[in-house]
Image (cartoon, rainbow, N blue to C red; front, side):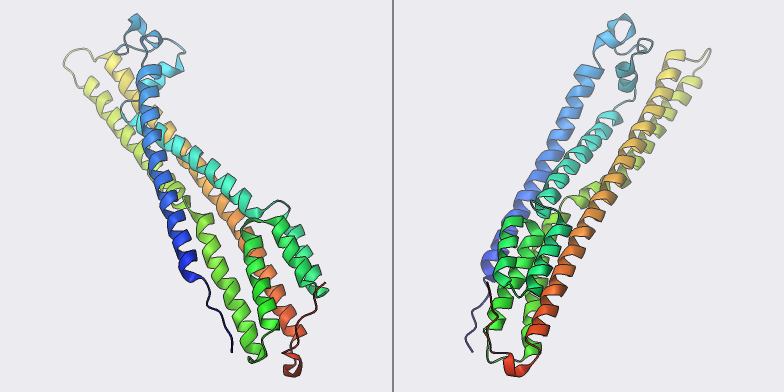
Length: 291
């Protein structure tokens, strides 16, 4: 039996390089998000023009929300960086998943592949994969190429050929799915820790507020107001960032599930078509007719 080994090493190398690039991208985004947030917090929100007397240690001007946010304290730039990370990684995932879907509708592509398979037009299905591109098309194309290879194989039983096609589809899917799920763990982590970070800022704000009340004599009204502002602003930023991260994570997870379902549907059609076309062992060695 003449079998050629799959290029597992190059594929693994390419996947490792892609993983390394994605990790570097994540680190760069996290660092830049914090630096940008710190600069905006210090030089934009903390500018003296937003505060009484031109001093950011005083109360913010009435209705000046930038000054109010600045009074949230040192936790604010941390929460701002989390918000920027959620937005950046959401945009990155949106572009990646959109590219993985391909140039046309997934439903239309899967329907075309099934029609080509029912007509025994494997070459036509391969052309549709080349036109579609993306992760789903890559997996389907790998299964179709294995389909052609098994249709010319004369020494294997039909069930062995079907298993070989199924294994090829599963391996191709295993190579494509990690690319779709990268950085989702960061978004899910931000969804959890953003609220906790906001609560931590709230605690610090309330400590400052009660410290102002505990002073001998008349309470420091400015310190009390600043402490309450710090608590409320951190709470709002933490809850808002967490809510956005949860929505983004659930949205992208549902999109990945749709792609996975499309891959499974196309793979099932390939396997069922091959089993139907080559169900008789007597005809197992005859090549499939392509147009």
